[in-house]
Image 1 (tube, rainbow, N blue to C red):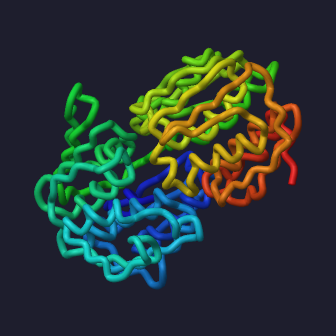
Image 2: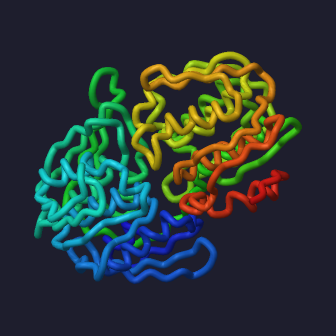
Length: 415
């Protein structure tokens, strides 16, 4: 949606995840000047206005729960000669935006108004042309990187983003697909980091995009298949980008029976079908440097760890504290409610599994967090007693078909 807005001509999208986060982002792109039409299930058409062609939106850009959509669009607005106000739901209003605003201010963006601590609601005014900068991200965050790169599209010269640990690279891949010049080189000790250099003010051209299946959504039926005895599930067309498959790597280390079938390329990304069979899992030590490749999957990994034999230690989870909720605390509370042995040491989560099904039977506070809700519903599929979550409405933000999809696989989810 965002690249379609910034392109000349028509962009056709297939396989779009029609969750509320995506639809809110589409509404924002439309408010900024794009013509957007739904052609059928998962099929959309976007007619863009090009870099520099955006118009001031009428009214507030309401992103609901969409942290990624709001932060990326702040990058867009921050680099363009427009003024826009960003807002969202109660959860989004708690999320830190200063990490996005700091580099944008260096690029010439003005923060007209903001809530306390740089949170939404806030109003941004972009410059006639952004300023090309070199920026080292303070934390491993694809959202910060992407916001800077999107602002840099209207900056003459080369903007470089340096990250100490490689984060998901969908923005870089999409930039190339739409016609921008992007150079990526290893950076730092051992080459674990990257420097991403974008040549500004390209002409982006609308194109055809097939969206691969989201590995963060696939994580829920995948873990469910592993922990429910006798299960065998095939999940089709899952993105296998090496910067997104940390959960799969970890589960295989734990002994998971996951088979990659029919690998192919779609939309510049490698995808595969995953055949998953119920497995006896064992505890492992998950290195902190793997976090960027699975940051959204730790809640459901904790569920898998509850069924494993032995201790699973998930290291370096500080970023979980600033998601839709304090996910680290929310996961720990959910485990406690279901009689699962665990502890938090600093930013590490330790889950001690017995190799058998936990008791369950608890009620989990989701804190308006879709991934907490889905993870503990998956837990309840295999515990000795059913698990309840206090709210499931927010699941629609990222996986609107979660309940019918899981029900079709044999899950019993009610309420």
